[in-house]
Image 1 (cartoon, rainbow over the protein chains, first blue to last red):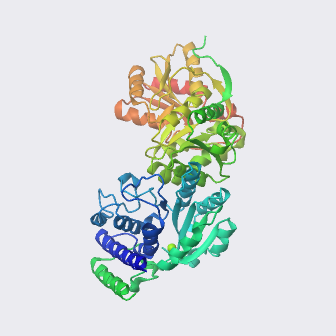
Image 2 (cartoon, chains in turn cyan, red):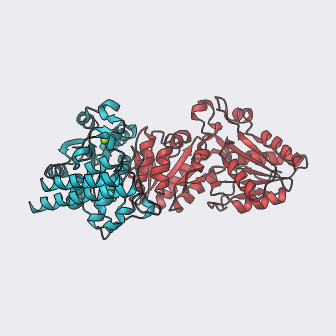
Length: 277
Length: 318
Ligand SMILES: [Mg+2]
């Protein structure tokens, strides 16, 4: 389990950076970013075929972040994966920064596949990518990260229909099922269940996982890898704010950044959780 | 003797279909995306001849535009076409964020544009598409005057490797009159007639109407310059200024809302470089209705007689 402890340590470092970046920026989306740290760690340090020294390598697996507002988890992960210096993380959301509030490809940050931030578009981008890669006989896969609240956008289901129609088994959608969105729980705001049945009805291979458990996530990747002729969706249960006990599952932390004092407290909680894992 | 002669009467969408077939032959990376109305919007040019490079995505325009953006990321040059109303206005956020912000070479065919789509009525008459797209950074807007130019616009769109390009064309059979050997260059325009009394800046179907207006006015000893503004964004600033200086008054003419269309683009140039009295022919802040194309163009003052009147008004204001 040497790999496991390395991944655990990496996700800890990513979370730590997320808290520090957001405190420095004074704004941003803390809860969702923390909740996705384990999935991003497993993707960039285990599952994805990629090369930080050659971000435009043709055969790299592509990651499309449909929920652009959790950019901090993407930035921190890319930095620790070696795409750029971790020092740059503190420029998040500042003027002339390559780390835009939502990913901006035009700013030239290595590892960013697409500018995103308007919800409901990433799965269509991923579908187009997957179609194009297949047509080019490129073996690369496309991973698309969607939010659960985002599934309320109708265009997601247009893309879901098309991806199944074209049997895009090189496409994997990961749904961040944290059960909350800005206004409250997804079931209060707009019910999206039964989620598994919906995706299955659209022709997708559906898998569920504990998105805050590294072993579970890796197992699910293993399970879905060899499914053919269908796009795959992984419904990953996560806790918003995961790692900082006092804010876990509190939707009020969806779109908020900690003050510098709060950040110190959160970092302590985070370290405590990591040491007592 | 008319200055320009009609080679044939054909819809501009035939030029799109022909152009698309030709570019698909030359460029293997050109792919087509269908939104159900493949043949009527001219996508048959690729669908029929290159079925493995044509993706039918059904009646789902938002997905179609964004899938095109994804395909562009893999080196493809995707063409998407549908009714101009739906492929532009329904997908405006997708065009803004996924296509324009990422500056991807997605090529959009805005078919059945203008009031001349006729009997279908207001829902299907795109009269706001130019205004919607003009404000999007990186977007190039082409509005060819006839089928010959539409075919050339398709080539220009493909050869413009870096940007999204919108090509606006119509359904109704209209005079095909431009010279097939003429160049079609993004950011340029074409002087069709030369006169010193008034300059008419026209685009799309109204270029022919402007030429007809030129003939009518000539009988009354009024001589107009007619400029075919086939590239609305970028627009040919030097030619606009040069003709304005010669004529000292102007008319803009388009099958589109006056607000935000080609005329607005011209007036922006004039206001900042060389202000002259200008009259604007176009849809005047209202929706269309069912009717025959020419009846509608007459009723809503977007025909040759509307241009003639506007020219006289502009000259009086000199
Ligand atoms: Mg959520």
